[in-house]
Length: 139
Image (tube, rainbow, N blue to C red; front, side):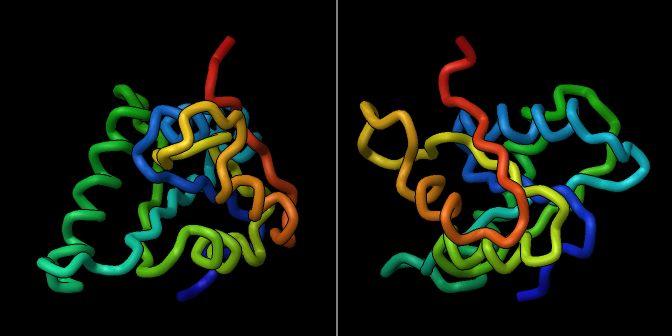
């Protein structure tokens, strides 16, 4: 896996409402509109019934749908990346030389009562670049 590039803005995406808000925030707050925002999704490991290719294709389709929902007609350039693996190491590697990493406060995990999810919590202590945590609840 390669880093998204020096000085880029990287957004972690899992398709959750929180990650869609994170992409919208990154697009709204980017002070370099001439440079694309890089959106990264970790595809995880294939399940018992799907091949790695089928799993990656599904993740690419999910990422594309989530990006379209977040853009909502905005024509800014967004570069989409799908990497196999767990979200934490994938996002750490992708944001290695980034200017900023933006993630939602919680993803699609099962613990609905948590204000900050496990991926966001782990990233906060391990990224090399500044990180923005976009709240789950817009209020």
